[in-house]
Image 1 (tube, helix red, strand yellow):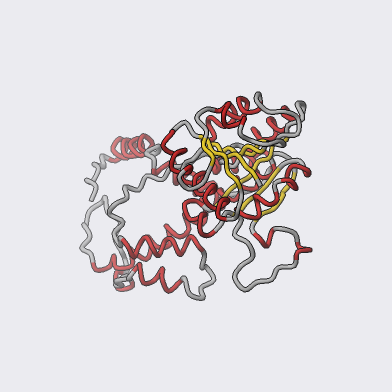
Image 2 (tube, helix red, strand yellow; image 1 turned 30 degrees about the vertical axis):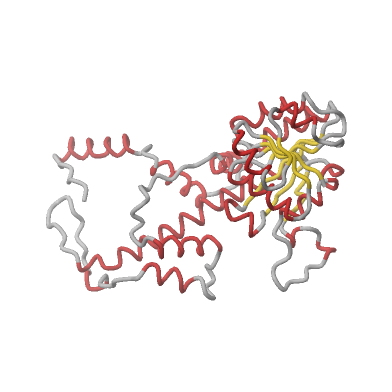
Length: 335
């Protein structure tokens, strides 16, 4: 099947490679000509402009966008202006589901289908496959099924899922109309924030398990460790995260990645600790607030990311100022 891929970053380029491995014809375009040329050398059909890109696609044309959320809507409109009734635009980036609802309704007036595909797999997707959460009109999603099937991981090794159960056991699912795919992916990423935070906090407690061996200042600014005899452990963090990977109830791919990171760099010296958020956690909490669903874990994980970005610095300074104002407490230098 032919598919057009626009946006050839790490995920977009690897998706093209995975599709080509499965025999699909890929027409590619990116504002960076070197990205296009690299995939042309691997068998893709390159394009030097948006108009040339659209012109090389056979009807019904299917254009897959793998772009930053901030520009996806603008580019989708540019693409839609060059398409005809019966064509399809697919957004595989981390866009806001509300944008997909609005674009889907607007393009439907022109007879163009808008399919939003929440795509999880990151840089490992080329080999592992991509978990796909799909929203859009039924006919368009059915038409694209060969593409989704090739991108998805497929059945787990040794498993024989019942086709009657649908496509979910193969790693892709039509979740509903336009917007549903990105809504499910949004919540997926919100959960990801919480799981990551739980691993990070737990391992940090393990790291502090030897605190009873350290000499602590005896002053008004330092909380005493009342029972140091219970904190005399030197925990091997890489070994613990490795053993958790084997038979533990908290095993997961994220734990696999955690164990790998600690094995490669136990002190995590190459990381500064600033954790970005690209929007999905915020949108998930807005949906929780709008619908009245409590989400304390996801909200704490998101706010922790804000703190890591320095957004708590002024509040921390104000807390210190208040302690000084009422008690004359001077700040201790950071360790």
